[in-house]
Length: 200
Image (cartoon, rainbow, N blue to C red; front, side):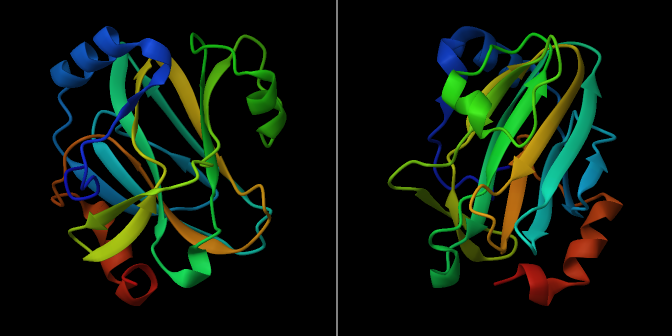
């Protein structure tokens, strides 16, 4: 995700520095797949990097991504919104949900768009830092506000990502996960066919 991450500022979730970095460095992420996101999306190849472009129309939508790993895997997650005046207060949130992840705090649990399934933990990103990181996306050549990438070890088995907007306002976002970019896949077509929508 070298184009998406202009700064190498990473947060490692709750002190899992050794495990996160070891797994991240040993991962074989070799592609980057841009996709125009629907409200439910299955990540068929979670071992590669993804950029998922979405829009809140009513603000009530909840986007749900689903994937599964055969063995533990570490990767960064990041929420990006266009660096424009009309998005200055737009801060969509996300949660990575899986068995084996830590129990969220009471405040994080209350912020979720739905109850956690039994036996599941979550990383909850409220995207509420007073000052947001600003990044340059080198493919679409535009500036974005970033939630700051979070490096997270994902346990083996299924996981979900929930994306929602607590303010119930409309706006555009890009949800990024993974490490490297390579537009060799077919997923780019939907983005570049609609360049005017995603190139601000």
